[in-house]
Structures are given as structure tokens and as C-alpha cells.
Length: 492
View 1 (spheres, rainbow, N blue to C red):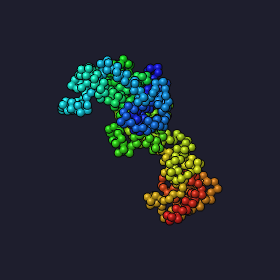
View 2: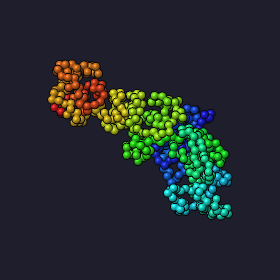
View 3: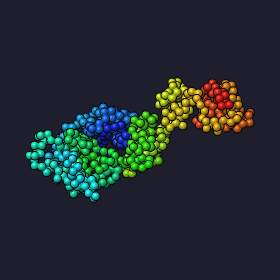
View 4: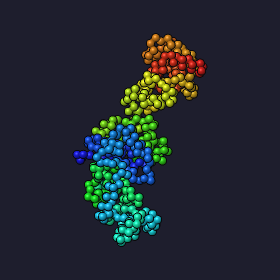
């Protein structure tokens, strides 16, 4: 492990931060924190046709929400800046020039129609998708086939052109991936990648190599979709005389039904795809981070619940699996409930306030904290507290299925009798309310269940919830008595 590890998260600002992008950022962050290194954010905004102005702010907000503090980036600054690729164009132009001068890249003038015509000529059953590569570049309009004075004249006239990587023939590019081990590519399968587009902007491939070198990046952790790009990058590192960073390519996040978790499949299954959606849905950032960390990485122990510092201590790149990791919303919700229960009632109340007050209007602080304490063990998300509206206001209706099942001919009389006993209590707490019900059951020679279920229905309007006597105390003595009498009158 190098003494000064430097990792980067390098998203393109083309939309909201994807949950898969957050996992990539997380693994980079964990490696940086584990080694005392630097976690760098670089905005790869060279594709101006897909640029979304608000995307960068969403990326920053998503990382901050997850607790992934940056050491360097567009807002923090740093010695390796600027941190937006659109502000680093001179670096790419210099690298492209060196590659062309060294014979490792070339200028190409072909139009899109000419390239398509070439592919049509070359297309066969054995080769259905011919590329612009060593086997075809000799028949195209580029600086390898045109006379030097013709190339110079075209450039002087401002002819539209791109710069392409000159991939050597009959070579095998081999490297060691920290997740997948030794990986090899035959250069016959690698096309002559465009490095500089006709608008003068670099493609991802050139900018990525130049920036990782210039920023001193020692380790690259990214999605496996970039694995096929590695030979192109290594050829550029070799041509420019630079040492490449260590590489680790993460497995895909799979849909619960199989295949990559795309926006389309996620929408169909009701799974949020952007970090903003998880935030808006009320998920705890600690739970999302914990869940994502284990989505492809194995700590080597039975431990499942981790804080961010604990993850940084336990993280090991070599324990990342090669197989796709299946996303489970149920598992994430389990993690969310577990992390929520680590919070105090005051913290849960604070996180639940907006949802609760949207449902029932303003709620006093003490009532909200009491409700959070009562429901603490039953919540999946803090916002779920808003579903227990009966803790803040009288129920407007009674569950029809519950009434049919639980409200018997003698229920109204038993509920009224219990209301009388509760009203007479000098001390109103869990013990006294339970004792009063048991005394009533004995006096009326009625089973305990014949009282407890209709009382719950009367006070909450539902048949499920926290312990009944804890609920009565949370609702309050006067309100509980009034609700019981009101239900007895309405349900008869």
C-alpha cells in the first residue's frame, strides 16, 4: 500500500446521483479513511451535450448526506485543482499533442456518414459490429493515410476532425485488478478510441488518464462497466511514460429479478434509484451507507451493523466479490430500522416532525418525543410515525375489519365500564391501567381479550400497534376516556 493513498470519485453531471454511484464513492472514501489518504471529488463534465446544471449540486448534497466528507473538490479546493474537467482543457490538449507526436494517436477527418459506410462494407455475420481499428483505419481519411501536407492544409483550414488512439496490433494487454485478479485483453478487440472530439473537448478516456496522473491518484475503484476501457487507458499511460494507478472494478448492482438495476427496472419494482429519492423517502443515511457497503463487499465476519468509522476500519478492497450483488429493498428497510433504533427518542422525533405535522398539523415537542419513544421498536423509518395519527388526534374512523372481528355484543358495555375505571385512577400509568382492566375482567367474568381488543380499537381506531397500556399513557388519561366513550356510542 503506498504511503499516501489518493482516491477519487469522478461522476459525470448528467443527472441525479445514482445509488450505484454512491456505492462507488463509499468504497473510495473507505479506502482513503482506512489509509489516512485523500478522498477527491472530480466532476467529469466534458460531455457538454448531456450536462445538467443542477447535477453537480445534487452530487455534493448526496455525498454530504451520506457523511462522505471530501478532502479535495470543486468546493473545497486543493493543490490538484481545478476539479472540474471543463476547466482543465489545456492539460488534455498537451497530452493529445504528445500522443500524436509520438505516433500513439492520430488525427482523423472522417464524417459520421463515412464511418457508417465503412461499417456497412465490413459488416458480416462473423463481425456484426465492425469498428474503427487497426483493421479498418488504413481505408479511412486520417493522418496515417493522407499525405502530411494534406493533413496540415486541412487543419489550417479548420476542417472538422478528432484525435484517435492508435491501438497496436497483435498485442496482449495484461494487468492485475484488485477485485478480479489478472485480466488480459487482445488489442484486436480494442477500437481506436476517440480521445479528442470535434469540439476540442476530450473524451472520458483521455481526460480520465490525464487527470488521474496529474492529481496523483494512486488507486481507482469504479464500476465494472469501465473494465473494457482499461487497455485503452494502459496504452496511454505507457505511451506517456506514466505509472498507472492500481485498479479495482466493482460488481454490478443487480435488480431483485435479475439483470442490472437500471432506472427502468427499478421504476417497475418501486425501487428508488437516486440518492435524493432515498433521502426524500425518509431513509437514514447511516442505514443506506451500511447497506451499500455490504452490497458487494464481505467483512469476513458475521457482523452486519456498521457505523461509517467501523466500515473504514474493517474495509478491505480484496474482499469485494466479483459476482453481481442483488438489491433488496426489504433488506435496506431492515437496516434502516436497526439504525433508527440506535437513535434517541428526541432524534427520531426531530426527524419525524415534518411527516407528522404534514399529517396532523402542529404537535408539541413533548408529545412528539413521547410518541417516538412508544413506537421506537416498531418503526422502519422515522416518517412512519406519521401513520400513528391516533397518538396526536382522535381517530376519525375505525378499521372495518377490526370492528367485524373484535367488536362483540358486549364490547360497548365493557369499554364504558373500563373507561369509568380509568377515569377514577389517581395514578395513571402502565401498571394501574393494566390492573384496572384485569380487575374489570375478573368482575365481569370476561376474558381479558374481550376487553383489550375493543379498547384498542376505541382508542386508536386500529387493531395493531404498540402495547395497549403504553399507548393509553401516551394518549393521556382524559383523551383515552373520551375516546372509549365516543367509540362505545358510535359502534354500539
